[in-house]
Amino acid sequence: MSTTVDTGWTQTDRTKAAAKLMLGWVALLWVLEAVDHATGHALDQYGIFPRDPDRLVGIVAHPFLHFGFGHVASNSLPLLVLGFIAALSGIRRFLAVSALNIAAVGIGSWLIAPPQTVGAGASGLVFGLFGYVVVRGFVERKPLNAAVGLVVGGLWGGTALLGILPTDAGIAWYAHLIGLVAGVVTALYYRRPARRQPALTG
Image (cartoon, rainbow, N blue to C red; front, side, top):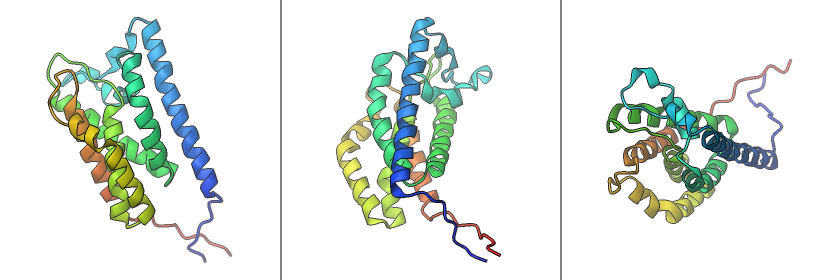
């Protein structure tokens, strides 16, 4: 019996997979926005409508929808970079972290967003990935990831701070704050590597 599982993935494989995933993800956002624009913003109805039990789909759909090309453009680069960095540690973990973050931001915004508003955009997920990337290296005690977290924090820390402050009525600062907290929590939750399952060798 052996407790080692050989996945056959090299670091190059992980890098390529992370790059393909995030390029595809961002491309999807642009395609959806193009469809939304072409249909007279028909996809906006799938955003977050606070406390409307008939619009729960927005809890899941909101990070894939945007209000115009400028909106999706502002989220594309940070999502691409932060998502790529997070996915380098493993696609499965990255998808789990993203799913937990999307759920937290979606449910939280549905519960506390101001009435008569519609919420959409990947910025909550971006803030979640920011929190995850900055914190994970320290809680995992991995020097390289900690260094990456410091660089990311230095580059986007000021923007993140401004994004969680209620200084602009047109920006869902609460979604950013929820995302940031969710990102930190997921980093703490995944602070230990997943246990490898034993494999019978004979």
